[in-house]
Image (cartoon, rainbow, N blue to C red; front, side):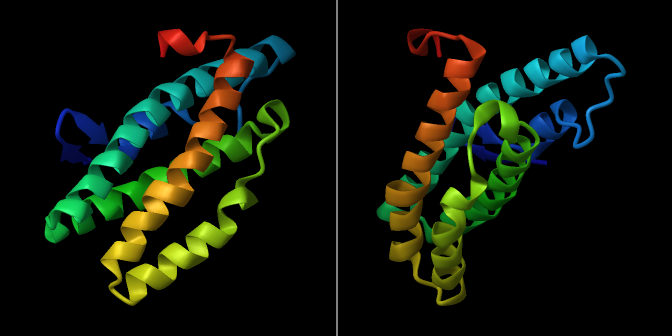
Length: 149
């Protein structure tokens, strides 16, 4: 079940269906096909996910704290799936998930301290730029022009 955020839905279930931690393909062609499918699913999910993170930031900024906190749970869940997908495709994407290590530590502290301003700032100023960088790299690998996404 995902959290509905305006027209954007953050739901790791969409991505879970496309992701398999151990690629099944028996031949090199099968594995390449599965990686391409995973990459395509990851790109699609990233577009919705980024919108959901932005909406969560807006909710924090507008004072809709209860809804923003509910969305935060979905953001963290979705981020976990993105990181797992990136990890599976690490050799192809050349993306290191440790880019987010410091941000995740700060996010954990802000949530533990109930610091909504810090949580919002981390989403907006730390998480979103990293996600944008990752998505651009995925699009480069996928060959999809940025103007079409």
